[in-house]
Amino acid sequence: MTVLAARTADTVTFHAVELFKQATALQRSGIDIISLGVGEPDFTAAPQVIQAMQLAAQSGKSGYSPPAGLPELREAIAGFYTKQLGAKVDPNRVIVTSGASGALSVRALSRMTSRRESAGLSRV
Picture 1 (tube, rainbow, N blue to C red):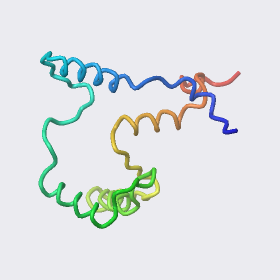
Picture 2 (tube, helix red, strand yellow; picture 1 turned 90 degrees about the horizontal axis):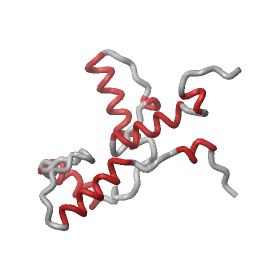
Picture 3 (spheres, rainbow, N blue to C red; picture 1 turned 90 degrees about the vertical axis):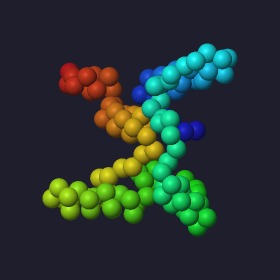
Picture 4 (cartoon, rainbow, N blue to C red; picture 1 turned 45 degrees about the vertical axis):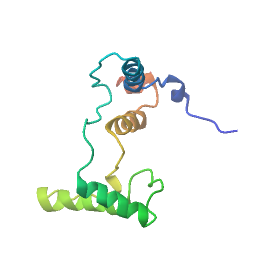
């Protein structure tokens, strides 16, 4: 049997998604809604991005990416920081997520092992 960290019981529903569901339901019922809850733009990707996505899908790159992001992208980001800012960044310290919420959740959970520790309190 898999044992999960105790802190997983403290996770809550992602409220922005719940609000988005409610806004979508209201829109479907005919109510005019301007939803800013999820942060999705009201326009599609640029033609170059769509073309790159099509080429990637056609070449078999349509599966899930590694949890920390594509190694080539992580290396390119690290290289950008070195070239543009003069900051040497190890690609292993770069994580690419599909959205800010996921990144923030991973960051917060990686730092919290207990409520006392997450509040910055030492154990007595």
